[in-house]
Length: 70
Image 1 (cartoon, rainbow, N blue to C red):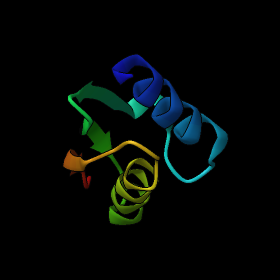
Image 2 (image 1 turned 30 degrees about the vertical axis):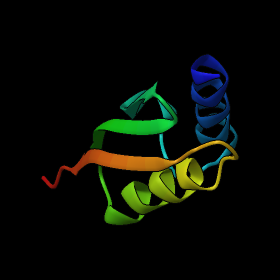
Image 3 (image 1 turned 180 degrees about the vertical axis):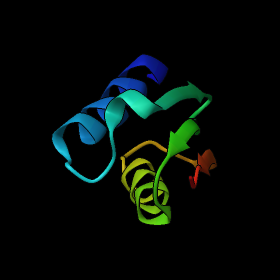
């Protein structure tokens, strides 16, 4: 189940144009999704969270994505 959730979350990032998929890492433990990485904008961080939270079987999302400003 965890591998399927991780795969689904990664697919959502790759299909969407809002979040660079190569900037975010996803792990899943017991239905909880953990997002890590660096993005350029707060909107990208929010979209990654929303995408992960919308997946069936997800019981929680921890968003450790950092917004890096230059």
